[in-house]
Image (cartoon, rainbow, N blue to C red; front, side):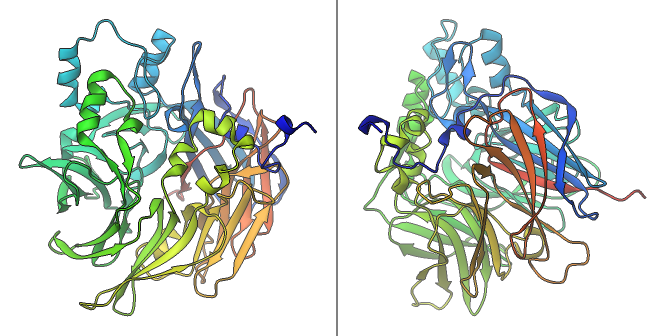
Length: 509
């Protein structure tokens, strides 16, 4: 093989991220079942993620910019159906009406709009819900019996969990004055939802925790309230945060040295530059972990550690007079650079690419004693991303197991699902040649007694030439052995997805 053709990561097909869906699946496709789906597994797996990199003859430059595509796997009576629809955001509709990219994204600059003057752009700064992209392609979360698609801008979209229709557009600037928020709110056992965002309070920008109280009737957003706040450690450079933690008594805020320059962000909006150019990594600055009291909303204790980048917190809990934070940690923020389309397309000749994605699950123990220092320990020596736990049972509580997908592109099989025992250190894995699973979601068995008594469900695509296919994978969560899968032949390419939610089927009353 010629030198120019040598692949540095021969087992990894990054093209699974670069596919573009050309045809939605509105009528449910019936899956071809192998194995046997447990009779008790009844419900709907909803997924969200990048759906198309193309608008007319133009192409997005970053994976986070791809048009949001929703997926639905409906499980009933041992059979499974599949649908997919594009989220009908304002951004999607504007782009496709113009047949070009007319809304600037995280990493992509839109074509200039001759109808927008500099005065329009100045006015837009004060209306981020309307001026920023509302392409909510990261995650899906329930608010009561409603499902919303999330990104980090202030707009979320309600979607129909059966048809995948886009039903409603919510601007959280209106109810909670949020300039932005994380893509991963916390849904509590009683139905309350908490999220971390940024808001302007008395003329100053602050990190805030907003509570959306559960109600069976009415709008959960009408009663939204700020229950905690924190002044950014760098007022003009607030930390970028994709997730946050919650325990019985604390909100856990991880201020990393990847920050958003407010001055650059304003300048970039005036000049129509992408948000990504407002981000800056400060390798010589510390990471701060802050505990906010859930009782009074004030800062309780602050800890400092060496620079670390993260996207996802695995879980947080209180134990033995300490708060434990389990997190997927990187040495720097190169993972965001690794998701530029050019970087993905050239990864096979980039000797540094694997190190950019070298996340490791790390346990940070924060002692509550006055002068004790935090302690860091690695939970497993392999790449873990999009972590999930038995959420309803152990979120914010002591736990034992988490599940994830591999982030090591140079692994023998990059398409690996991982189970980590945080107590014994034992690691179990599942992989199948040329299979690329997404975030594994734990579904408990109805009579389960143990934390891992249930199944994992994951959406799977194939590498290579098998681009028009998708599958629902069902694994035994204890052993990670495959129980069943449902395969679908699709009319168009299916890209790999990011995050989702499982809705159990409700029994008839």
